Figure 1 (cartoon, rainbow, N blue to C red):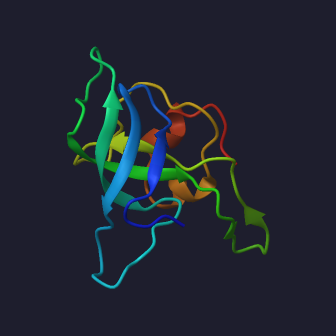
Figure 2: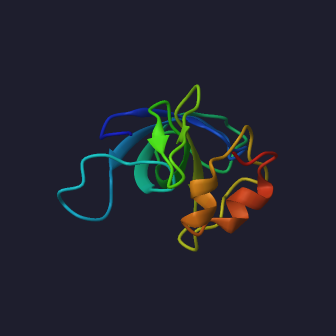
Figure 3: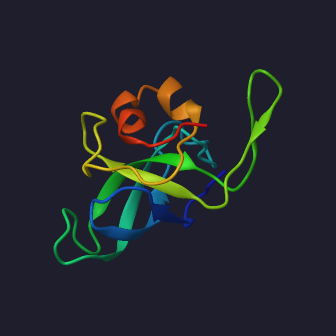
Length: 122
């Protein structure tokens, strides 16, 4: 459960270190973003050899949140940090690796390439 201004860690090797959420596309009433949602974010700190530059505006999909989320089977899923993967307009990741676990809801949201690059899916 992330809102505008939230800081996210990067779960890929695109070169960025941290993201800050700018907006949550969709309905104008939507205040929070959950696992599997796309957000618009600005890069805070970037590696000079990476694919993205510091201060650039990117689109990212949320792969982990601290706030627990209820699944359809009644169980809950939560992680130790808030993390995202930078994607392009075709919903494909910019980086070549996805680090750390990824929630199953990301696959259900249609980001199969992100899930295939991840080591483990919870």
